[in-house]
Length: 489
Image 1 (cartoon, helix red, strand yellow):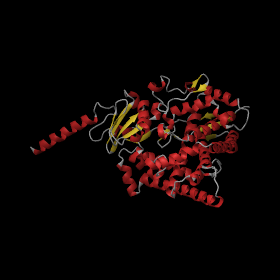
Image 2 (cartoon, rainbow, N blue to C red):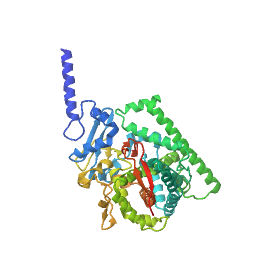
Image 3 (tube, one colour):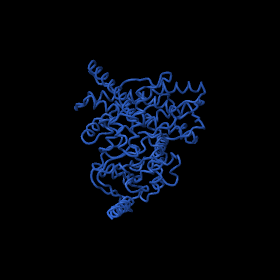
Image 4 (cartoon, rainbow, N blue to C red):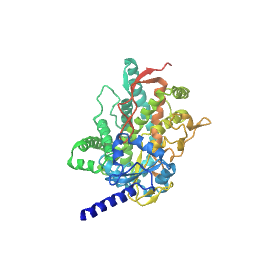
């Protein structure tokens, strides 16, 4: 008799639990008692962005709630009104939070991308001032000019002569690494010399980003925590990669400190500005976190954006031809800041490329208190709240029926580039945490694109399948093999 009663209670609890997990109060993937949507999540863990996009397209409000065993309740949205609410209106209620911090703390520490509260405000205040100085802007232009003219163009010319396929993504990542090291630290690793082996630091950074991302995709979050505690599997690989990254950052700081002690004068790189111009005292660990954050922002996002941009151009010759006409109007070999800034159609084409293939495909926050989003979705205290730029770029409700088409013209009104709301186009975040390096990124991307398109065209290997690997930034699986052809004068 007691066994029957216990069985009845178990069944009753399961039914009630099932009803709660499948409540009509929110939209989301099919869930089951106790395990939630773990089965669907496991099946789609290698294509989460595409899966989330499909679900969000079918949601009446472009918002859904994910319930999964062993993981915090997650609200995912592609609704611009919700994005504005999260990133601006209720900014204080949606910090990065302890969950995001825990996943990335080993790699990024308390750097600006991972920090909250006073630590974030201090770094933001200093960086905001420095990124708005004319001297830094000129230094960035000088760096990208020299790296493009003296290294990138010769590499492409050599590829023309050989006639073999070149991994354009690898070249762009090497370029971006050289460039960010010059801008951020005043050092030159010379990674764009293809005769040299790949940088150990760059490879370690790639692996650390992929394995840190894997933590967020774990079917059960306890899995990676156990591996970390036991120092086995992917967590041992991650620890080894992070050690290489941190050793590199530490060496950079020691060298720059030694040079400043000798010369006692301001240099143009960002690290020197942090060391000399701030009233705040940063210990070595804090400076190391800042260095790693700079590299992640300046290398991976720029290279990712340009890789997808050139891949799209390869199948849209009409867009490439229009960019070429705009670039050809500039007669000087070295393009100035004002000339780069004036290229309206090129700017539109890069924005359109990032609409479809944003370098950071989604970003997550943490709900400090209970809240209700503008579309009526309830956000429970302690939930993970994610906005999804990749899905947003594919929403008919936002961009129209042609949302899947690559059309730079959608950004041009009467011959002039017209930006969209940052809450509709959240590629650079928005609100108080909007990306400080946005202008710097456009200077680099437009200068590289203009210089390359003016002198070369790329033929993509027809066997190549463009696909992303799960990482912190949108990296193309197996690179981007291209055959480089010299453009006739």
